[in-house]
Image 1 (cartoon, rainbow, N blue to C red):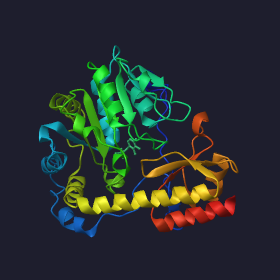
Image 2 (image 1 turned 180 degrees about the horizontal axis):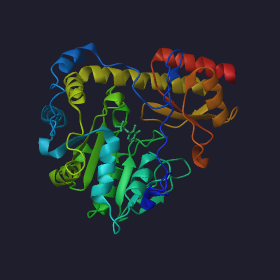
Image 3 (image 1 turned 30 degrees about the vertical axis):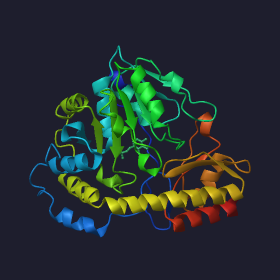
Image 4 (image 1 turned 120 degrees about the vertical axis):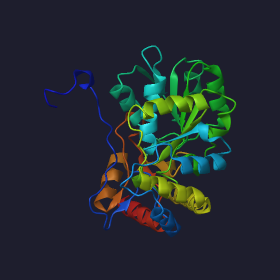
Length: 350
Ligand SMILES: *Cc1c(COP(=O)(O)O)cnc(C)c1O
């Protein structure tokens, strides 16, 4: 850190992304929950029709917004697009927390929430998961804080029923409840259907996981039009051109080819069940995942050793040092072929 670095931020712990290898040859990459499926070729027409790059991108993502509004049965004023959900989440921290309104989120969840609170110098509370790694909804009932929940939750893959989110939203009428639905299509139920009923529910979804666009950086928030207007204040005060024209074009193509996305999701779900079953046969215990990844452990090997041994054999998975989950590894669900390689390597190792 240079002597010029802001004192306000001297304690910041930046987010540590999963490894991104420089060379993908012979690597089975199951560590950052991307889609194993490349974009469908139908998308090329949309890329060719993108706004020329010598011009600024459409700040309002008009076509994307209109198309998504139709798919979600909401109005365009209920949607704002962002440069990945990381940006929208950061904007939600900025817009909906302050010294009197701290943030609250679980101890085991998306690691970025704490970083966003820190970088914006906002107070926050961390609520512990139950021993079975489920969310304890009592921590959030009438808590009077700005609530950030990933549903399904990050690291665990466990989904919260919509009726619990409703209870949380109802009991905190003066606070925003942000539901980060990065993985919702893989088995959770979306809270988008709550945004008419609750003016304090903000749903964030990304194109990075189910929609094969992690490198395109595209996500959206859906909520009451006043919440969306607030997020637009932040967007127009930081970077109005936050979504580049190529990503807008590809995103539109993805929305228009929703059946392809649906097929990919179905394939991931059935591969997930297959992997969980195969791991069960060799003595692994796996949390009940509604996401495109699983958290699994075996009495025969520590989480860290399994991670390291798999890495030596060219299979990248994720491991956390957090005491509650250090026995586990987190494995992204890829194609059936990728998962068979993983299963063979695991059998070799143990
Ligand atoms: C992957 C992930 C994100 C980040 O998504 P981007 O849109 O790629 O920024 C946000 N929240 C959770 C829970 C995630 O797992």
